[in-house]
Amino acid sequence: MVGETTMNLRNGSTPAPPNGVAQGMGDLTHDIVSLAELQYELVRNDYRAGMKGLLTPVVLLLGAGIVALGTVPVALLLMAEILIQVAGLSRASALSIAALSGFLAAVALGVVGWSQLRGVGRVFQRSREEWIRNLNWIKLALKGSPPIESQQVDDG
Image 1 (cartoon, rainbow, N blue to C red):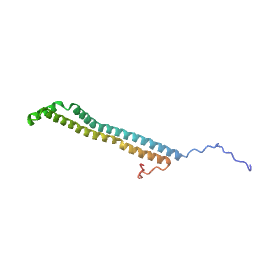
Image 2: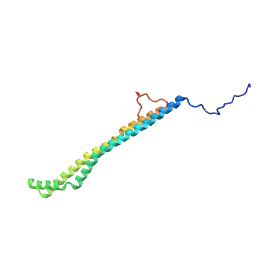
Image 3: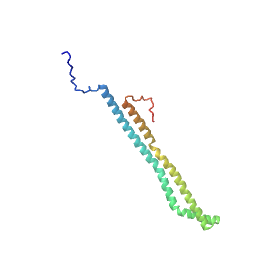
Image 4: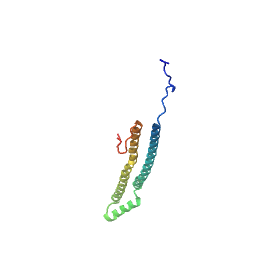
């Protein structure tokens, strides 16, 4: 009849999303899961590399500790005896020179071990940078404008 309002049979619900939207969300979810898997593999590989890089500095520091604590007594006493006999030094002077030599060797080992140990912390740098790129890509993809492969994502 004239002047009557037509009834909305959907009761305020919105229509189902088009097939393209569902396909796009499926592709996006697949991409995010793939990125998560790759990120996990990268972290695992970095962890393995880091553990390998940790072995040498720890061994050097342990060696420095052994030399510093024990000062390789027999070799240092032998060196002191040679100084007494060859150079004619007093026993106290010869023992002092031998102890100082042992201490300097321990310091040298410690410095080398410490310098190598400091570099191990940079092991996860690659994983962190890739994680930031992946998060930026996901944000852009969820916004609806994923970057093209050739575009650079800003790491800021």
